[in-house]
Image 1 (cartoon, rainbow, N blue to C red):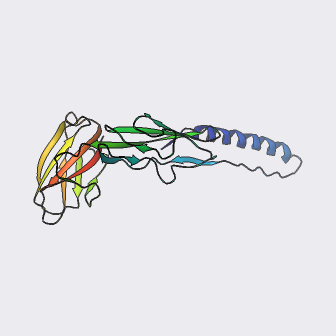
Image 2: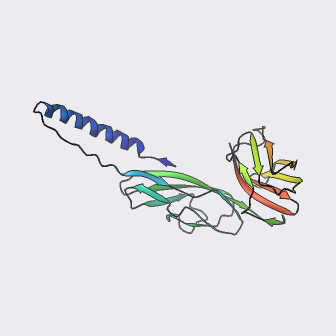
Image 3: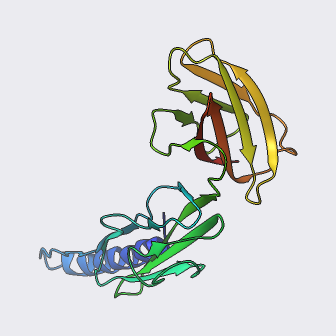
Length: 218
């Protein structure tokens, strides 16, 4: 989350403090004391919610219970791009994307201060890949992903794991068969040309079950 007014706030506070110092210096000759109070609105903070994966034709609500806090109140919301949304000026629009989309939310308060944040909704066709389980015990970390990817939370009787990483147009950019010797595995991802930075869908097949996770490659 980026507060676009932070620099202006700091600059204004600096000017007020300098002015206060000059006043105090002038009044010091008369042995008088003066108190200067500085009132500053809380930092404007926004929460677009977590990156998520949904099946095509399904919907998800963007934002959080409190999408914006702080600032001077009376917020104005703007989601971009304003596609696949029922209301791009709502704090919590309903999103039914036809393709994986990263949204940028800009929130402006009544004083004109703004903050921005991002969220990605990944779309999977969910066709012919067995049972899709979006809420499961598997943990994928770190995410964003660098050179190594860890997956933990496999059932203790897991032996063979088929892993595929797909880009946003459904092309397989990484595929590997893993053999678990416990409840977690580590996967080296070293070829930055093979998997350039971006948002991907990871299909983890264990037996007849496929679990889908969204990952961000950096």
